[in-house]
Length: 256
Ligand code: MLT
Image 1 (cartoon, rainbow, N blue to C red):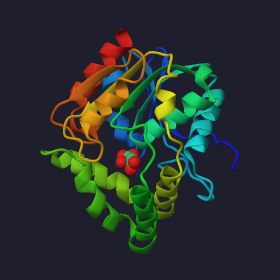
Image 2 (image 1 turned 90 degrees about the vertical axis):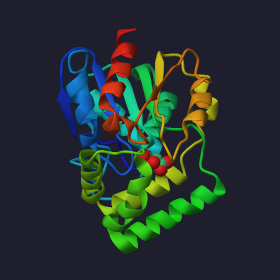
Image 3 (image 1 turned 120 degrees about the horizontal axis):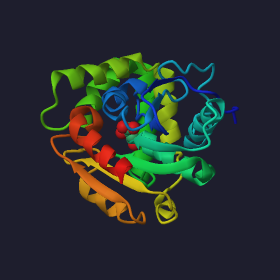
């Protein structure tokens, strides 16, 4: 396994640190609305997972949710942060579960957005392999054209569509393929839910097509004391589609 690396990040605000972990195949820029909206309450740190955005890597052969989590711990060490609030969307949520298992003492609170705890079914695992092959063969634009429309709700704004496409196209194909295989191989987090003993929140787009909200609500109920917020007018990238509702839910959680 590769050594953990210190990640690139963008920081805004003051106060206790909150680290934002992006989804697949995105980068730190997906959190721009949260950096703007939460800077009064937290030092907001949006990281680029290895290979994404400005966190360049020489090799993509060892990607895993555990390694992504260890990279966040290495970055916290570098920033001299003993603890942080963590917020992750989708694949970012998978990373939060891994980090809770590996370094719970570094976590002050957990916010899960549009994610899930279960592992992939055999069919979904086969889909990850096909996706990795398609990305390698046809590139990110073709992959965007297939996946992009599934990630937004019923009425995405032109800005959201454009921002999402920009992130797809700036993700190197070999990185997206490695992510896909790392997600295929991720650990099941359902048994982890009941072990979470820090304050937690779960935010979920009402129109999420890839991870339906009813299943998400049932998952959140298994985390002791977890608050659940349904985000209206938003699909899977709810933080981009309805940033006001997401920022309001995050602010209420952090104040509480
Ligand atoms: C994401 O947004 O990170 C992905 O939809 C996660 C996944 O494919 O499981």
